[in-house]
Amino acid sequence: MPSVPLLPPTLFISLVAPSLLSWNFYFAPVTWVIMSTLSSLSFLYFCLFSRSSWYSILLTSSFSALLFLVNALLAISFFQQGSGFNYQFFEHFTFDSLYIAVAGFKTEGALFFASALVAIVAPIALLQRTKLRKQRRNSLLAILLSLLLCYPLWDVVNFLLADEVVQGYPQRPSSETGNANLSAVQTKNIILIYAEQLEQLYFDAGVFPERPLPQLTAIHKNSIRFANVKQAPGTGWTTAGMIASQCGFGVTGGIHFGGNSRLSSVSHPFPDAECLADYLRVNGYYSVFLGGAPLAFGGKGNFLRTHGYDKAIGRTELKEEITDPEDFSTWGVHDDRLFEIAKQEVTELEAGGQPYLFSLLTLGTHHPNGELSPSCGPYDNGSDPMINALKCTDTLLSRLLSDLQSITDSQNTVIAVLSDHLALRNSLSDRLLERRDDRRLLFFLLNETSLEITTEMSHFDISPTLLEAAGFHPEITLGFGKSYFPLGPERSDITGSTEYSPPELIAANLFEDGVAVDLIDMKIAIGVTNLAIAAPFSDDDAEFDTTGLFLIVFEDSGDLFDVIFTREPAKIAKELDKKAVVALAKPAAEAPWQLYVGRLSEVSVFKGRTFVIQDKLTMSGKQLSDIISRSDFPASAPNI
Image (cartoon, rainbow, N blue to C red; front, side):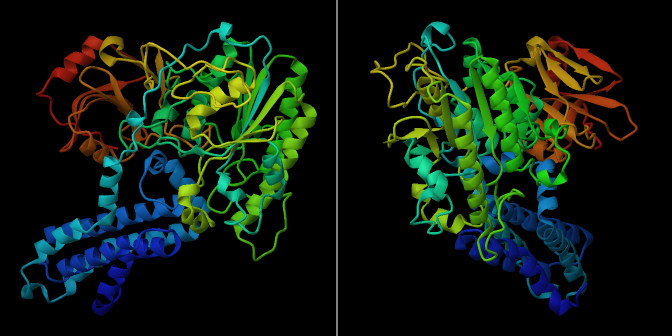
């Protein structure tokens, strides 16, 4: 520990560093730096002039850790995205995401933990060693001021109060879908390529004079280009972008601190929604998804398997046929190898004779620096890493599009390229953010007349547009979306007697359906809905880690509120105080599984009854209702 004269500046630097680095490198506002500086100075005042008692030391160390943590989390958000707290950040705020981040950014991770240690230990040493505490009486006011000036807390408040909520989407009449009599006599195959974070602004030579996408630019100019596709709320990460583009609505959860456990745990998410592959299956199509990343990450596989896809392939499945470790990156299989497999899949689909949907997700332009395929480069050492990743994608993706056009019949196949979402924080974000008002998703169709469509669209309109391009009825809608395909027949105004609203993640009621815990198959059933007892792992073949708590939170009516996997139950309990809950956990590695039924408690984490489970346990809705309705049960916080 440094001597007393060095302690204040060391602590000050550790607290201010997240905001200063984020402002200098990751496009954070200078307001954060100013507020962080004032907040840290107020806190230092508290440390220097407070009494040296055990509770004061505990309070000071805890408060310092809190200050550092919230600022560090906001710094992580700017590091990953170039923006503050939003749905994307909280949906990915999980331990598997943290593991990937630490593995990919070891230096940054080491600095994070070192700074956290300083923030925790330095206040303790200050209170024990300084002699100034008797000279001031305003230390309590100083710590309150420090809290008031904590910029990340204000950023969270702004996010929670923002208009960026799914329920705010304009209601749009819904036509009947899923009926074969709406389809044309002859329809086309559909190939939908999700280009990871490859937004339209990368094609602008004024912003990127390096012209990193020359071949894709030529292809883009000779296609039907939808130039005004904006990113709607609840669509700004890969799984959400896929759901929005195929189902027509955005993705949000019950609370913003539950991570992406919802989609990972729910075996059949959004059971009432009809999505692109669902509709095509009714009309005789066979659907295949191929991606280099794990299907389990973010619940992507659960969505695909239960919404019309007959075959879903991710990193785990590809491990069986790919043996060269050079073909794998941090996120999954490199694009050059993935595209070879994609061509094999499409060739087999063509030979099968059945109409098909083939969806592909690339990885090469993943933030923050791209994932350069082994076959690309070497590029100029002075080039920006994301510029190199764009050049690599330009070569590989343009070659793939050319090969797909050779494999398929242009008169019988629609080939589309779509950004899964706008680019998150990367090495080119300064240029992207300078033109933030001009940022749009990339969406274009090959095999058609060169044409540019400037009508405002969103993810929601992608599937209806693809369906019409493939020969289906122009008035088909999915979710909030409708078709903007420009070459179809004249259409009447879409009419309907009912308004569309986003479907529920789970169609279940605990008081009507009860719960059945099955530890053999590792699932909890609520009626016909199965929830996988698992954390949102980054790989499909990972085993369940019992050091967390699996929560099914619901309303007093019995309707589901949220599904959460957490290792910080106190935070969830504080956020959801008095909410009814069914929770599953192991208190220790060798202990039996326990089921908790009761209510979350800000004071004691949990209040209710505990049941020990060997293999299976079933509780009726009436039993759950009787327990939840009690108000006299003792506190019994799970010991995790």
